[in-house]
Image (cartoon, rainbow over all chains, first blue to last red):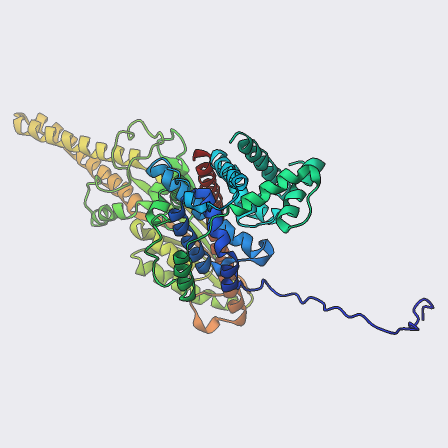
Length: 187
Length: 404
């Protein structure tokens, strides 16, 4: 018997931790995902397309695709939110391509009613400037802004949606923010 | 992509802090305020759309959503994408190559599956090519009617023989459209010592069944061995089937087949006969015009000589006809204790069963190998096509962002 292996003494308490059991690819809880991500998906698509009616169509199509393809979801490939936003992104880009074939994109007019008249003037001006800057930057930067601030994805999820590394996603996001800040200053 | 610089990391962290409600470094306050302003600009769905989508989710998306425009192309539109069309073309090309390719290599063997070992031109100009041998062996059916005519004693040979071969031959016979070919074969069979007599009898049976005859045979049987030799004459039109039938009588040790172009000899024999006939006709005319007894006797003497020449020429034509109409088959029968006699059900032993099973496995493995060889490139092309299609679709989608 090895002398180093001795019974412990003076033990007053024990800490137990649950050992995670290895399960094979947990099934997707579509209902929960839908409830958590419905508004986020819509916000992302609406910002990308700048067309609320089209955003509703694309959001509905994205959730329907996700519902029908939910068995193809693999947890080891990324979070369910990243998977869902990947589907939404493809649907939105398909819509953009269809518009390109059909006619030039006509930006939706600004929603003047969205700014309550009682808001402070400074805050209102700030919002107008941000909105104008969002319309001025390119679609790639606008997509990153939408994923980060409107859909609420963290950098790792953005990277998964775009199919790039996390550091690359961070660099792209920083670049988009730089352009947006410049656009706000010139607004 | 290089790692993020400290400044970039700091600003990204400030964005996350602002969104999470944590304190932002004083020099990045403006950035934090911008992040919050952006979040406040987040579009929100209308209540009507929210209720509509909730209902569809609860019902499991029944039917097609009338609000959703057809986002996907029809299946036939997808098939018409450039990578898909290229993939289909590649698969078609490979299929054509696979289907047509192996046929080129199959010409080295005769129609009956027998190896043609040698062949020569009677004119002696050159040796015939393997392709000529194959054609000569494979055109048995074309010569069948001619063989019938020859065996019945008819003289014309025009319909007998094989199409002209591309290789050079005798100057006298090169221009002929149909060629006469003499064929011969040899076969060495092994049979059990106790089966020598039985197999010998069967060889003669097969010869008769194929319309041939035994020219010579020698059979010896003893307790520990024995054997025999057979010289058979088989109608050329039945040579392949006769060889197949003979091969089933024992274990084939050796099998060879030979084809020889005898068109020149045939032409020569017919020419001699034609010339002799023409001369007799001329002599008969001279005899009719002869006035003196001396002239008459002289012409009659020449007529007798010409008549003999005609008979000899006829015999010569019959000989060459017979050489083309009948093939000589030499069968050598040897005793071998390990040889089985195929076709005898009572001799089918477990050893035979094991051999058959092995053969079946060999054939199955061969078929599987051929299938794999054909499927592997197709699978590779399919995978490449799928990757190309996926890449192309992704690229087109990304281009949509550039074009807006």
